[in-house]
Each structure stands twice: as C-alpha cells, then as structure tokens.
Length: 100
Ligand SMILES: [Ca+2]
Ligand SMILES: [Ca+2]
Image 1: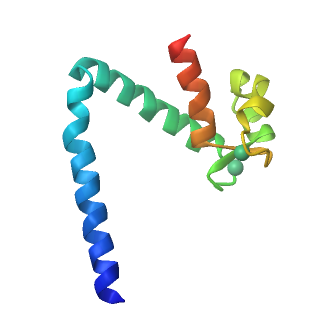
Image 2: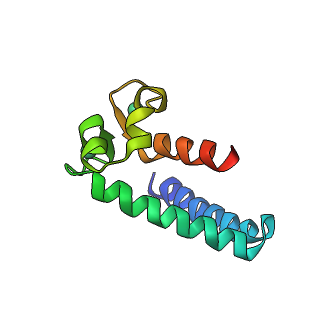
C-alpha cells in the first residue's frame, strides 16, 4: 500500500513538472506573465473577499467586496448551484471577459 502511494506521489510530481516545463512554449513570455499577474491579483481579491475562509464566495461576501460583476452574474456563475462561488467558478467570468 505504501509502495503504491509512493508511486502515485512520484507520478504527481513528475506530471506537474512536465506541465510547468511545456507551458511556457504555448504563449509568448510577456503574454504569460501578464495573465499570471492577472491571476495573482484575482487570487488576492478572492482571498480578501472570502471573509469566512471557506474557499468560496457567498453572495454577501461578493457584495461586501464590491465585486459588482460577480454579484450581477452570481446565479449564472454558480455552476453547481450551491449558493457559493469557488475560485474556479469566478474564473469562468474572467475567461468570458478576456475573450469578449
Ligand atoms: Ca466564504
Ligand atoms: Ca458553486
């Protein structure tokens, strides 16, 4: 059992390393650092807005953080309908904004 777990852990590390190694080739460096900065800003804002620290934003948390676009589209963004937005669900908004 421990051997299997060790194999899984090694596979995860190598898999992640591979993803990091191949990613920079997919877009120009300047573009990538721009989207990384964008993502870092988003993560900070998300964490600051998540007052109870459960890793998701309730509607009230989004309202308190003045995330107007998130509040406006809250029901649409809440893909699984649990009344909270995870970072992944809010990222769908960022993606739609970037592509439109
Ligand atoms: Ca929360
Ligand atoms: Ca949700």
